Length: 501
Ligand SMILES: [Zn+2]
Image 1 (cartoon, protein in one colour):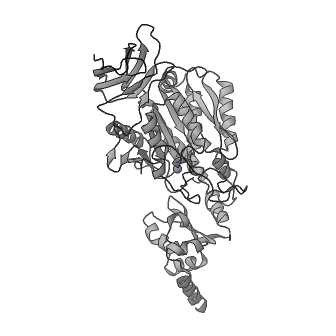
Image 2 (cartoon, helix red, strand yellow):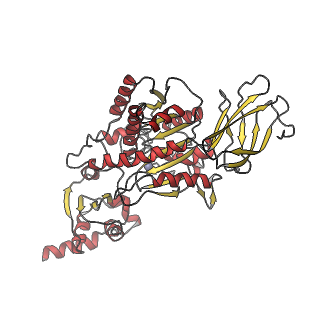
């Protein structure tokens, strides 16, 4: 009784409230709750320091793994909660290892290391050299590891004038499912080519690019068993020469140059540290270089968690110019992916902002319709027995996006009158696009411009330096597939009056 009273007193006296007390909270216990709902967190988290991120390691299918101090543990017992203490350790990192890796404190080999991903890709290249190639797009900021994209098509060795689709995993190091889905997608597209009719058509009609892991250094921290909490890259921002000092690094998904200054945090200790300046991180520059070269039509960026698809954008009430079409695709994508419980599908929602992340940059600057898929529910990465199911359900989403790369839309080609030379040109849809968007241009090597559009009539404005601009009204976009249109520009004064049709 005396002991119990002592614990209770300790619990009451030691229980941190919020704010200033947070820095001192140092959990030493890992607790496992076997039947906890998401709603229960509203009452449990306040007893565990009040900050969800610092209290909940994971909550997957009702199994909650929580970090608590001795006092908080005692208080939970007093309140009648049922749980067991899985581990006591003075290192928070060790508690997280036990929570997320399991008893071995190492990542299950169900997950791929980056080396294994490259090996699997290279095995596909060896067996099917005409269907897949590997291209280095950059090196990581801190440890200079190569970052690769795999390019897949019916003739992967050449650059063809086709709609291009990008899939990217692991901006965030610990969100491992993105890499797993990308590897599975890559493997199935290559293996099913010539066997499955849809796959064969996608490979023949598109160019598909897959970056399984963008944040290679961070992914390595998690897969090597160094720290399962790692989210950012491993940029040694304080320059002390010591790596993996949690939470050092830059949030690679806050470093893009679209409203960069309004996103993330300027505090290097924040999990959302946006970096010193836009595109300060070479991971982001690698994706930028690829996007500028390939001009992707559609893109999916995988994250975890939430079972939700984010799309651009709700900018303080201002919707994206392509709102209706973006929403339709986001809803189609979300509806094609079953939740872990299997009873419903993912939801489609506007992304939280237009701030430094991949999707506003890809859409706002490059014209790529980019969708963030938040894979799974309850953890940044999941117990090994969940991986296969999450991959299978999310492949259905990837397939939906591939099916949407078939239009409807306009496949415009701009050439010089007479010589028929392909032209670099700015293409605007003045009745759709607003000043929120950066102007989009044709591929200078082919003069091509692919754009998804709702079927119906559209107005297009085309401008190129040294040529007279043209405005095309009432361009009819068919209900299915790509409507092709070749536009000739006449040399002349680009400031001259518009040439109508
Ligand atoms: Zn993420």
